[in-house]
Image (cartoon, rainbow, N blue to C red; front, side, top):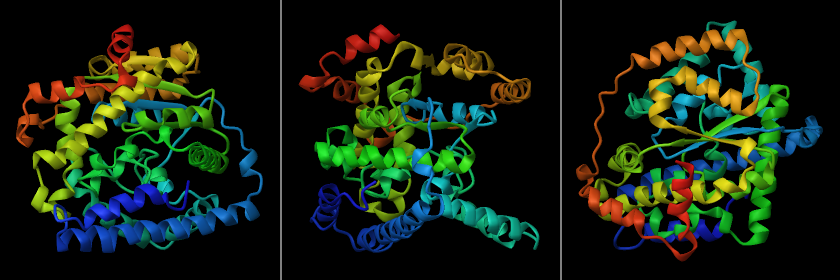
Length: 383
């Protein structure tokens, strides 16, 4: 990725100091802690990525054949499906720490440190558990997260300030709408993003020994062109779900950090539009791009079917892609499916909790730009 994509970065920073958003707490936590931390991390990773060319010069020739990408609305089963599929040994995938530290050299260093740590009683492992407990406790019951848990490829883009996931830190993200569709970046910038995204996945696949790359992302609708240009033979699994339910749940999850760094705007309607716009553009982006994939490389599943019959749904995916289904993985799949059927969520989400009505949200989603005129027609063709 870019070390930093300045046009978007400067717009985000400028709004931090406007009368509407300027608050000392917000500037300190986001402007003086989170943003410098992201930039420092980006600098460190860039250094080790440069070392990759010296220590592992063959990685950029690594073949990435038919990677599988799970796409969905946010909060619509992509994590659930990913964590079932990731147990199949034919796949490799990002853990959160790997998306943060996307370098073969760092991977190797972490493996060596982990080996040594286990032989001295795992003090570093316990420290990581403590960090996970502290930083991800607020998402317990919503999205199980931690440095060693599988996660989206979103931080590859967050670190360059090119990702909708930045809504966690910037409640005014809808005021910088180009961030929701980086497929529309100027051609020179877009080509650079394609190249570096390809290299990021090549690094990971090289380090894993050449397995099939498995990814999931619930906000990638605006960059599917970049994905497909990087990997023309990519395979996609799209989970259809109720967008109104997705918006209600997303408002709950993505606005959680706002209560820490921007309590003055927490749960206010205007700022909540950032989350709604993120969901809307992702939703329309997926459908609009859906027919750019060859039929044999794309499969559509229903969220309700995934939840009610996870084993049958997963098997239908394997059948569609003609992927081998090992006996070992089938045993794991049966176990996961049984556990999933007994799970009951205690969370109830409603857009009314954020000052909206269902009618308002439905009307907002229905307001389409000229280039989205065929969206409804395309969607109904998929149903």
